[in-house]
Every structure is written in structure tokens, then in C-alpha cells.
Image 1 (cartoon, rainbow over the protein chains, first blue to last red):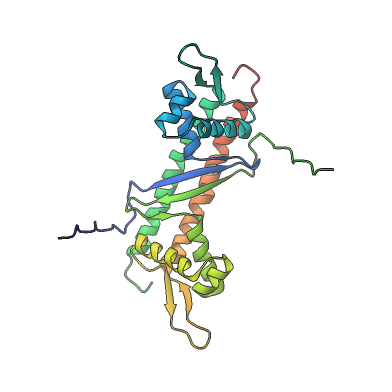
Image 2 (image 1 turned 120 degrees about the vertical axis):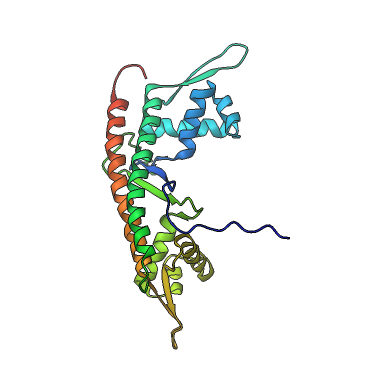
Length: 130
Length: 130
């Protein structure tokens, strides 16, 4: 017997989410991937650790950090030449502020979205000719 | 003489923008591409016209519409078997409401983003050690 395809719910719900990407007028783009890199650096204490946590190469991880440095005009990560374990990395105040900024925008925008989606949902439920 | 690379501004600005994508709990995703398809259908009066306007194949255009129909649980586009010029297409009330919903979320979320980016900008301008 073939597996039944899960039924697809059609209505908007309170766990609908919003993905956001900030498009800076300067050309920089700040989306969930780069923010995840910063959060992983804060958690692991190094760029290589963040790369491993996100299954991303060191080079790619570093490029994303460097891109954020350029976009913000200030370093978001401070690195230190390490001892036997290699260098460490930590967020600068700007890096920490960027995460807070992004997550706040995400939270508030999601509330905005749910408000409008509830209105849309009400319209989509109406019987008359669509 | 080589063209000068435009200087990259590092500060957030009032024309920073926010790209949004709605991730419905049901699994559907509604981003700028699908909304552009709906708007192009409203403008051109047909799916093929919308595809041409967006440099997209008829098949791809139709797939995006069909995906929206599934996500919303109601048709977003009504088609009519046409005469010599081929069939026409127009938005349903749900399709129109979806565009309004998306654009409202986009507008309000962008204001949210600019408010938080202004705070971040203030922090990034501070002199002390970052």
C-alpha cells in the first residue's frame, strides 16, 4: 500500500512564519544564513566551529562574515590568533547588535504578517464567487 | 582609465528595503516572485502574457499560480477558454486579496526594519571599541 500523501492544510495558521532579508541601500544583503553564522560563532567561539555547526566550509563561513563587515562598515567579529587549538572568534558589539536588530525585525514583522494573513484567511473562507 | 568602483556606503539608509517571504504552516511559500506573477496576470490579462512580461516560461508561470491555488485552498486566478487570441486570465477576489495582504505586510515590515536599522546604525557609528 503506498504511503498516503499528507493532507495539505489550506488555511493560514498561527504558526505561519515570515522569512526576511534586509536589502541595504548600500548593496549589502542580510538574511537568515548570515545571522545563523554570527549566532554559531557566538556559540562555538570560532569561525571554523561555526562552519562545522552549519556544515559550511571555513572559506564560505569567513566570506559571509567578511560580507557583513563590509555591509555594516565595522567588524562584526573579532578574531584572535590562538594557541594550539587555533584562533578564536567572538562577536563585536556591532555583531551582537546586528543579531538583536535582525531578530527584532523578524519577530515584529511576523506579528504584522499574521494580522494580515488572518484577514486574508477570512476572505478565502467566504462562500461567494471568487 | 578604468571606471571607478562606486564607493560603498556603509550606513543604513532610509531606502534600505526588506524582502519578505511568507512561510505558511501548511508548507506553502509566498514570496516576491509569485506575487509578481499575480500582478503581471492582472496587468496583461493572461498567463502567457504574464510569463512574457517576466521572461518566464508559460509552464513555470502556470506552476507558480497552481502552487498559490494549493497554498490558499482557493483559486487565485480564473481562466477562460479564449477565442482567436487564446484564453484570458484574471485574478479572483482571493488573488486580489493575496496581493493586498502581501504588499501590506511588506510595507509595514519595512517600516519596522527601518526603525531597528536606525538603532543599529547609531550603535555602529559609536567610536568605542567594538
